[in-house]
Length: 486
Image (cartoon, rainbow, N blue to C red; front, side, top):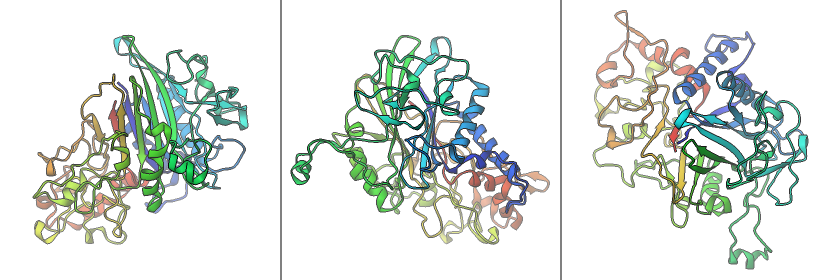
């Protein structure tokens, strides 16, 4: 099995986790201290999850420079720093060379980290990056899926050490791998161009000679396809295919998920017997409708012949009698900024009374902070991981968690959960570090807000949303990370 952490770290760049600036932030601390706090949160999450594969989307980049590689600007410097920190603990960490996802001036990339060897003894897994593409033309090269493509090394720092850690040799990919068997791992590349499933109607209407690239236009953030071959200590093997996506909100997201992604050959083709296909990312489509029922957001990806299963997969109808705000909190992956003005005048992270009928409580685990804004409250369950396993693959049941630094994971403070919503499996302590005092004793957190915060001092609310508590968590990202064992 492999443990995966996926996370949209909002507008990620080196300044997010490393700064030497002594300029003061709005929170009254220096930029350097703020970066240290964010870096510590990232470290705590990764240390707790102990993943074998990490996927980070919304990594800042630009279209500067030639070829497909993301240039060495803030985003690439940031993920290079993460790689260095990971290798300081375990030198087996590697990173797929990030590629530009659009041709826009300010674009994005994706960082996929993986352990070349994880576990030990009978639990050891050797994991090879197999592309699926070939890297060509060196420093200013491109990712190619042409059969006759001439493989090249990545040239120049830091790219040349991403797939081959310092002091180690480049590894040949085993012949039995689904992609690039017998070739060199460090000359492999992610795929960012995809062929369309052939259609007789499209051929007749457009006179297409053959399949074409699904993603047209320079502004569409294309999927970042990476493939791996895993060899287990007992001799078993499997192929792992990961599509990392970050859609544009609104109509573009609906078009991407329902009209483009399902028509890509790589996405739509059933996995081979020992392959798992994974689609992870920020879909910018809510898994829940406004009334709490399933929004069926991934219909084209979950209906035969395409059979992905979302790990955030609410039932078609919200169970009757369920408190809607509480129910939504269990599915939330997107969180709001702290409110403007006096937080004690809001229902953000606390409650103003104990009468739920008056709408004055903010139920666990959302406490009023889930969503995008007051104007867009039903924009919260937008990240997900979807799986499609081959015939010979047995997946562990329900080993999935929304990692929530605000209240901790799993969501087991209230039992049973609202509407029997999933609570998760990974144990992760909440990261609030300066909880307010009640008669000289720090409050316990999380709390049932109705009995606890009714008539509570106003400074309780202010303390909960300040920098050492919710503030630095939200400053790190407006998304919560996802964890799965596959």
